[in-house]
Length: 173
Image (tube, rainbow, N blue to C red):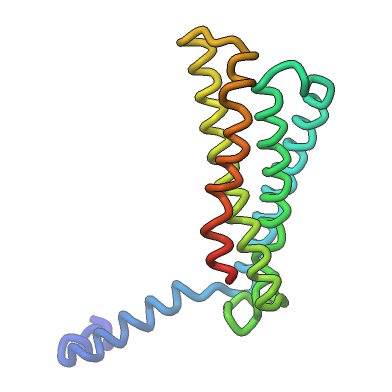
């Protein structure tokens, strides 16, 4: 039998301390783990950037034709900003507020990246919702592209701006 278990059985406080030590050990990441985490995010962000740029290039000449082309183009633009923000967010936090040994940011850079991440995540969600509504209206209800362009598309951009800004602005102020 392990001495720690024997001591723990006799002293419940020692068991609690032993459990807390184990929990702290599993929550702490080593420098190598942080670096691998950062590399993983950099790789996934780079792949996302490449995909967004490819989509934007493919749609560039088609923007005036279909509503869904403009939606996908807008999602790609927002995804570029989101991927760039995601690319740097782990290192642009103040070193005194994280256990990341590679952090070198300030409160201002942290706030800026947090603002961009929040705005972009909400915007992408809104535009993805609109893309789904667009297909629902065209396929199920037989709406024409011109109807959606006149009746719904202008409002979606306003809704995306209005719904994506309040929370990050409140957080920054």
